[in-house]
Amino acid sequence: MMRFIMPIILIGISVTMFFMFTNPLYGDISKLRAEVSSYNEALANSKALENERDKLTAKYNTINVDDLMKIEKLMPENVDNIRLILEIEKIATPYGMVLKNVKYNTTDTSTTPTSAIQSSQAKGTPKDYGVFDLEFSISSTYNNFINFTKDLESNLRIVDISSVSFTSNVQSTGPLTKVNQSDNYTFNFKIKTYWLKN
Image (cartoon, rainbow, N blue to C red; front, side, top):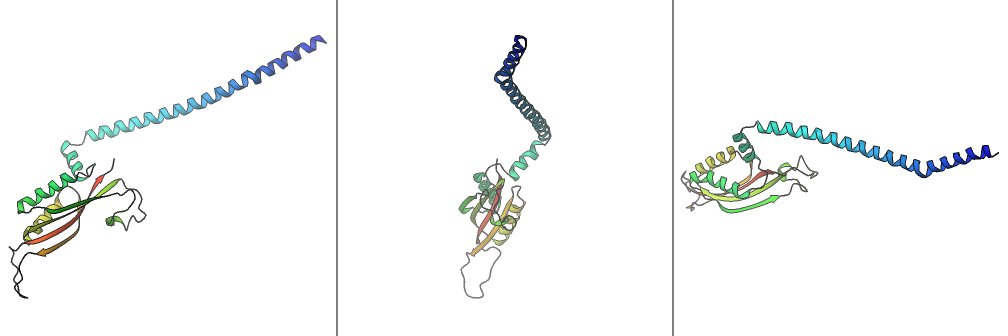
């Protein structure tokens, strides 16, 4: 009888030991294996991202420095309103023009679509660029105004002319007042330019 009781007691002790110690330990090992698998996957993704970054860096380094400067000027990484105003003044100077009544505003494209692209982006989804609105006025002859506008359009920085209005500085002498090419006008510009958000 004792011969049968002893193995039963040992089996009972073994089962108890399994549920008290071995089974929780096995659960912990399974969790650790899952965590190791997750870390290995993250590490593989990190290496893939590093490889992609290295490829992009190598491609970036092949771009000519002058071209990089042109790209930066085309679409700067910040509003840089002072530089834009100085660039426009530089364009205006050869024609004897001085910028007056300068006003500006930065449009937040993360919430509201700009009027220039409102029709195609009516939902106002976030954009990865900002819009900079600038207003100014200049006094010049009509010919100089045309030349200035052409130079402004051909400038490397992207500029959209939203509107132009003008007033005449010529004193009216009646319905048949003659307009000369040398007469000065005041032209009021509204323009938009863009910048990349980081």
